Amino acid sequence: MRVKAVIFDFSGTLFRCEDTRSWLRGALAEAGIDAPDAEITGYAERLRVSGGQPGGHADFAVPEHLTSLWRRRDLTAADHRAAYTALIRLAGLPWPGLDEILYDRHRLPQAWRRYPDTLAVLEVLAEHGIPVAVLSNIGWDLRPVFEYHGMAHLVASYVLSFEVGMQKPDPRIFRLACDLLGEDPRDVLMVGDNLVADGGATEIGCSFRAVGHLAVSERPRALLDAVRHLRWENSLASAAAAGLDGAHAA
Ligand SMILES: [Mg+2]
Image 1 (cartoon, rainbow, N blue to C red):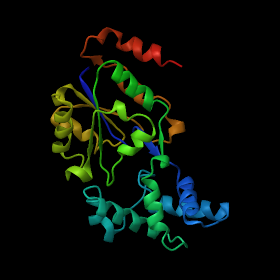
Image 2 (image 1 turned 90 degrees about the vertical axis):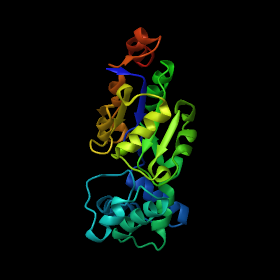
Image 3 (image 1 turned 120 degrees about the vertical axis):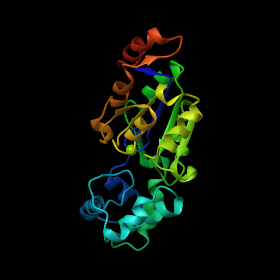
Image 4 (image 1 turned 120 degrees about the horizontal axis):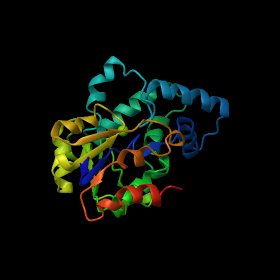
């Protein structure tokens, strides 16, 4: 496969949100509320079932009255907050105002964990002169996450749905990302954890590799595996395989 640039999804691909108990525990600490472990565990499970944690588990049902808001949640910051705080409230937490505190916490760089091979894959691509874009359906600015984790210098462009008023799998948003990278879509690889949203890149001719929406501890090198068989279109092409398997074998 010939590739001159790579687009990565954010949540569930390069980063994963903290687990739901850690999220709830952090918000309670922020609010100055003490709660016993058993209570935190119980309400974390209710939050998991309600789908209130952005980037969390995907196996939940959005109730009828929220479906319209849910569909457009990534198009504006206000709708993103409204959709997720509504889902958080479905969990019936006993702490007034914690819905907003939980929402705010999920946007903190400290609330995001990078996968074990996130830095390695971005460094390998940089070493081979392959520019990277991050393309996310999201309602807030994720650039500080990359800055906090020391990876901002490895990302050439960000395309965020709420900033551009489009969301994956709209072909126009993939085309925008390719344009920013300065490459023809046929020379661009999309890597993501959502077969529909991220896989939509194939509509404009990009290639696509899927990674699993797993906990960071359960996915040690899916990102490296996604790029290991690429044929790099630059002067270092012949070193690609060695670079992947040699420099980052540890
Ligand atoms: Mg994702």
